[in-house]
Amino acid sequence: MSVNDLQEIGDRLLVIFDGRCGFCNGAVRWFLRRDRRDRLRFVASDSPAMAGLLARHRIDGAATPDGPGSLLIARAVGTAHEEILNRSTAALAMLAELPGGWPAIAAVLGIIPPPLRDAVYELVARNRYRLRGRLKACPTPTAAEREHFL
Image 1 (spheres, rainbow, N blue to C red):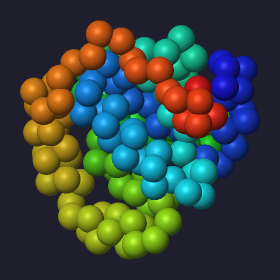
Image 2: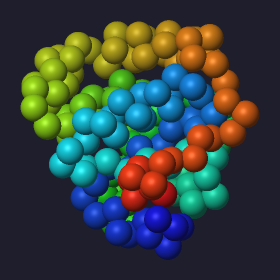
Image 3: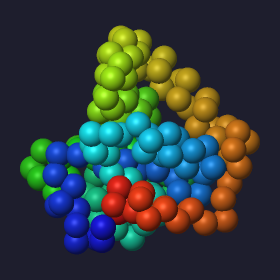
């Protein structure tokens, strides 16, 4: 996928993640293995393809709570209904797209008040480099994974 292919995302969720974070990359690989309905697309937050999208939503590409330090989900990309979800709400939106029991788990976790969910999310986000390290560069997806990345 290229910058011009944002419209081809369709009704899929665009997952914007910290590409240099080992923990984040592990989570992306976890979701890739489970996304059997092809509902997710992934892009590193520092990708040039994201500059316009992040600017439209006034999100700084630097490590801020709404930047690479937070998982972001873009829905309805390129439409009048485009929206950005972040933190625990973004993670729950991803779970809800997976097959099997994951949508039910997302619904149950969604009952937890967002400030409490986000506090747990922020604890993990603050320690993500300690958990799995910081990568020198975003890993290159395998041939099988490439179609899922922007």
